[in-house]
Length: 113
Image (cartoon, rainbow, N blue to C red; front, side):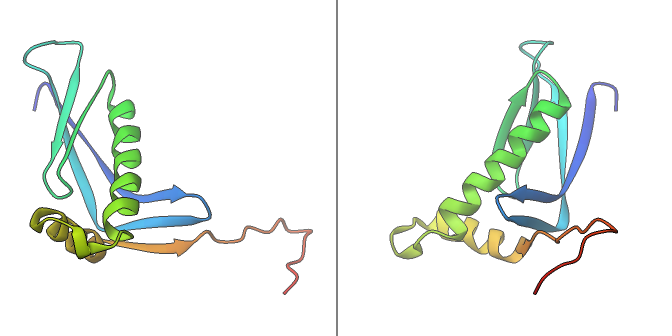
C-alpha cells in the first residue's frame, strides 16, 4: 500500500443531530503525483474530491462536504435538480440517516421529562 492510507466515516455530529452513514464510508487517501506534500482522495459514492496536508485534514474535509451535500441534496427540493443531482439525492437518502444526539446524564443528575 506504500503511499496510500484510508479512513472510515460512520457518524458525523451536526448541530443537534448525528448523520449515520450505513454502510460505513471508506475513503482511500494517496500522495499527489504532482506534489508529494499534498494528499488527495477521490470518493466515488458521494462524488467527493478531497485534498489536504494530512489524513485527519482530509477526514474533516470529508465530514464537512457530507454535511454540505446532505443539506443541499437530501434536504433540498429535487424538482429543479439535474439527473445527476437526483441520483446523488437517492444515494444520500439510502446511505444516511439522521438521529438526535443522545442525552448524556452525569450519575448525580436526573433527567426531567
